[in-house]
Length: 391
Length: 133
Ligand SMILES: [Zn+2]
Image (cartoon, rainbow over all chains, first blue to last red; front, side, top):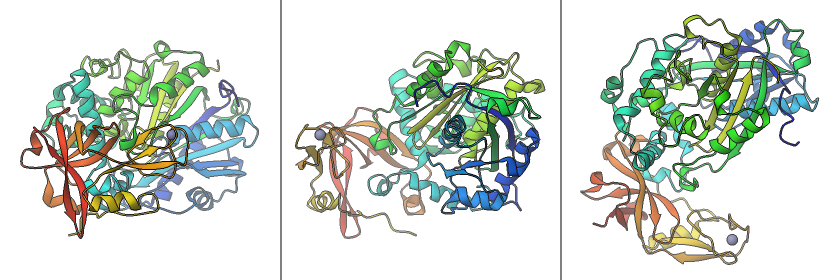
C-alpha cells in the first residue's frame, strides 16, 4: 500500500477512559471493558456492530492470545483480531493497523483497547520486576539495568551533548502536573514544583521519582470506523490525517544512537501523508514515560530546535494556554500509566481537544493535533496527526 | 535474597561465554563485509552473511553514557546501591552494556577511558569495567 492512502481512511468516533488511579475491585480486563463501554456509548453503536478488535499486552494479566481473550470477555465475535506488542508504541500502531484493515474493507468498525490494573492488581515490586524483562535477558539484565536507568543514560547523553541542566529538566513534570490538574479523571491531583521534582527520591541519576511515570489502574479505548459510516453516528468524528511508524532496535545496547531516535522518521511519514508540517499543529500529546522523553520527541517531531526543546517547558509554552500545549491531559507523568493504555490516553485526549468544549483545559481553536507513542527504550515509534475536518 | 544472574549460554553465545571464563571478550566479525558487532548472532546484521568470525577485543574503551542506580533493578542488586551501569564504546568500535566497578566508580563522567576486568558470578565470570585514569 503506497504512503498517503491512510489519509482520511478512518475517523475516531468514540473514546473512553476507565476509572483511573487505585481502582480496587476491577480486573485489567474489567478496566478495558469499562473504557470500551464508555467509548461505544459515544457512538450509539451496539456491541455487535464491532467487527474488529485490537489490543496490546498485559503484565498483570499475561494471557496468551490477549486479543482473543478480550473478544471472549466482551462477548464479541469479530472478523479481525490481534494482539499488537510494540510496547508503549502499540496504541498508535493499532490505530494504523485498524486504518489499514478498514481501508481494505477487511473490517468496518474496530475497537482498540488497552489497560492494566498495575496499581492494585499486583504489588508494586512485582510490577517493577515484570517490567525488568525489557532489558536484554543475557547481556543487560546481569548488570542491574532498570528501565529508569536506560532512560537515565539517554538523559545523561542528551545533557552532555546539549548542556541541558538537571534543574531545567525538572520543569517537565511540573508543567505536566499543572495540565493534569485541569483533567477531572487524572490520577494525580496535587500541584508540584520543579523543586519538588529535585527533592523527590533519586532513582537512577539524573532521574528522580517525579521524573518517572505513574503506576496506575487504568484502561483506555477508542472506536474507529470509515468516514462514511462515521456520518451516521452520534458523536463528532475526528479524522486521521497522517500516520507513520519507524522501528530501529529493541534493547538500548543495539540503539543506533542515544540522541537520535526513530521519531524523526515516523513523524516525517505522518507529516507527508497529511500534507502538513510541525507549524500546523495546535497541540501535541507526546509519550512521557520519563521527563526527558517528551523533550526528545518534541525536537524529533520538528516542533522545536534540536537541543533547545526544554525552553518550551521552562517558558510556559507547553502549558494549556501556551503557544503549543504539550500533554494537555497530564500525560503518563500525571494522568495515568498502565501499560499500553498510557499512550492510548494521548490519542483519547487529542480527540477530545479536537471536539472542543473542555473548559479550562481546552486548547483554543484546536483544529489539528499530533500524537506520538514510543515503545521499548525509544525503540518503536509511531506518530499520528488528527484533525476536526477531513482534508 | 535472589542470586545475581550468571551467564546464560545458547547456540549463539556458547563461545562468547566460554571465552569470557578465560577472561577474554569476543566480538563477532563478518567474514564478508567486515562489520564488527557485540551481540552474538547467527548472521551479520548488515549484509546477512552467515560467515561469522570471532575476534578478541582489547578490553579498552570509553564511557558512552552511564547512570548511577539508586533504586535497585531487582532484590538481587539491593545491597549494591548505589551502583553504576554503563554503555561502553569499545576501542574496536562496537558498544556494549556493562557495569563500572571500583572505589572511584561513582566519579564517572561521559568519555572517561575504561578497562575491562571480571567479576565472579557463582562459578562463572562476567566482564565489567573500571576507570582507567
Ligand atoms: Zn556483513
